[in-house]
Length: 354
Image 1 (cartoon, one colour):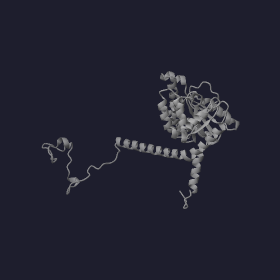
Image 2 (tube, one colour):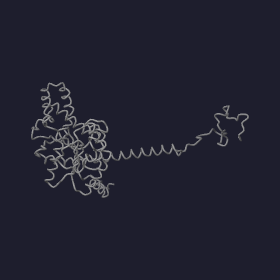
Image 3 (tube, helix red, strand yellow):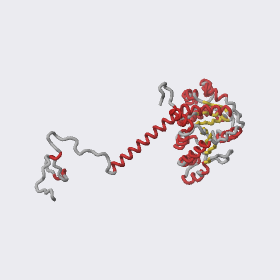
Image 4 (tube, helix red, strand yellow):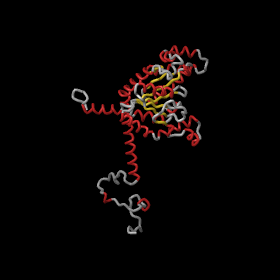
């Protein structure tokens, strides 16, 4: 409710503050990227970097096939889902087993949300980092990726961090493939998005930044490629021009920790952006979803009432011809079978007492 001068009332201010506090902590970073891009090394460096400033992150590992973990996660999918057992039970290959393992894990994702809720209540961690498998299709078309992002974003400020391997993206065609994946994840999740140009200690990130901001420079690089993909790549680059304009990207080194301070400035800005813009949209989506569920439930209850004989009462007669009363109408048992004429007269030989 607003005051007469147009300013929000104190009750609205308290409500807004309560909602803000509910979304305040921890900020969830969903770390995505292609296999071999250095996600796990990046998360490990995030952990050590934050601990230097007494900001130990809450670490969650969602990669069921990871063997050598350079950090100790607070929650580990490997404790709940056995990757090799999933392969055996469902007759799957490595990639299919990883996707299936995540699908199975999301059936119990509410338990993970409960643990994050305790982190929020205790204020023991202000950042939660979610390490994901290299099977990027989990977040482009699989249901588990959508459940994960929607569950987190409905309760906590959530930012998607897309880790890109600079060393493997020096070819413009490979670079474009990476950017297409990033674009698809961005529009699928509809969340604040940061592209991390990883391994800047090995390869100078200047080329990637130039390609994102200078279409002509990228086209010149494509011209040097003899692949049949060149024309398609050039066309897609033009399509992604708008995507690049709003894209936040930062070159870092997961080995040396270079530019991590700049990365966390972007994280803070993205968290504020979530609070001011994305949270409003997510609240709207959540209310619409709740309203849809209520409507569906009411419909099921109505259908159940009808099927059990308790449906809506329908009057037997809606209208009568002039001068007739209901008492004037003769209803014979089995009238359709026993009435031989159009006037509804009783057949000879029929005894109503039989």
